[in-house]
Image 1 (cartoon, rainbow, N blue to C red):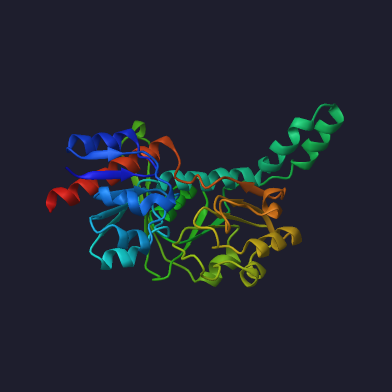
Image 2: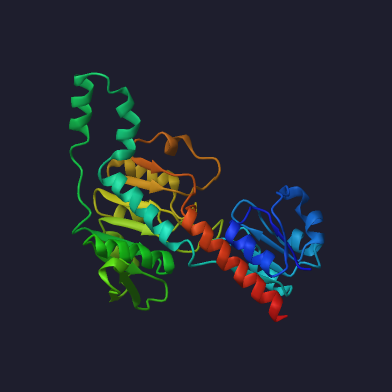
Length: 323
């Protein structure tokens, strides 16, 4: 019997697929320091972002055959080392794309209408004077329609962001390293019939994107310890009053340089879901009135977790049944 350790949990729909295939699934959480010993009894481990699978764990578990990542980024797994050792490393790149893209726009809508700050201050609005003061403070919002959104990265998440942006009437620019064209589908609700609009975008240079975008959102892989993609030099090139959203990885944006850009007014607002020192967040970020914050929840919707569980279970079952 194939034994699976879903150390960070798995959606019930995914667990049912494993059980229907005759696999044994454990969702009992094993502490990181005890993982190497515990995994000796399992054929596969499934993780989200909380558990890391490094060389020491891989070396200690010769029976381990599969490492599954419930999500996109695999920076918590030594992927190359595992594959060189003959292990299959599997992730679910498409399952959470819509959820992450919608969070981008949650931050954008919050940013252009200053809701992140209004929500902090409205509880103190107990008089007409304070209400009128807050009303005046938050009456200078802007619309997204007609503005340019620059998307750095053209994977499934970036494409979902573009699809939503097109529906809002925004101008879309893409930058990707290989500079290939990007094809994006805009699917209308089934109640309107099976209508799909496909649009092909020519990629632009990184410099053109950051200098001409009203809003910038990042969606690319990022190795821990790499230099930031966006730092002081890049902020200096941006439009005055730009908005920026990071749901990719902590460290993609220099947090210190972001704070400076917010304080100077170069950046009007930021939406941040991922952090350099996660789970610890700098006080300068936590208390900044120009930042909309979320605790790394991009793919954490009911729908995404169900899709992730199903896709991951299907891939793992397929691997073992084909052997």
